[in-house]
Length: 207
Image 1: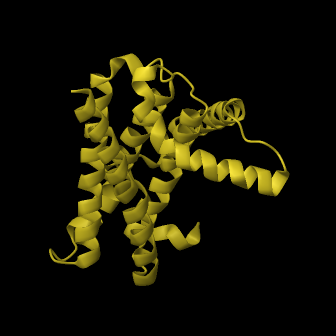
Image 2: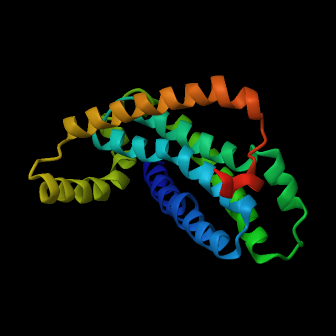
């Protein structure tokens, strides 16, 4: 059973590379080329939200005990952000059924949603990791961040001549998380009451 869980986590992270990073980047350049304001705005909002996902990876590197909670919250918020905007949903609904960029966007949104649900299910099956990611039984959750750790460590050493360690990663992750939370609270308290679920994508070039 443990082997199955390891495979499930490994496969989920591999798929997440496609739906969390690969497809959104592709869609963004595609939308810019097509001058598709709705999808451009959708992706713009998505990338703002997805910062939390990358913060969670930094927290994984720092072996912050609650990093798995942040990770799942990030994927949940990213999924919500792709369905949240009513004006974008209406615009996409008016596209031709076989419009390639529309089909790809739908595949991406549903794929991201399913990955989010999958991560939540796997997390519940690893309940001991929710508040103690440094536990030996949770090492599979930390492995995907190892390559990122090596890349950041090399970059830190090259750019600053400094060593990027787990404590540094934990500090940077928690600091970034604090800033992110403040930004989210500000948006919820100030901007959301004014605009609601209207993204204002038609004015994207005016912003």
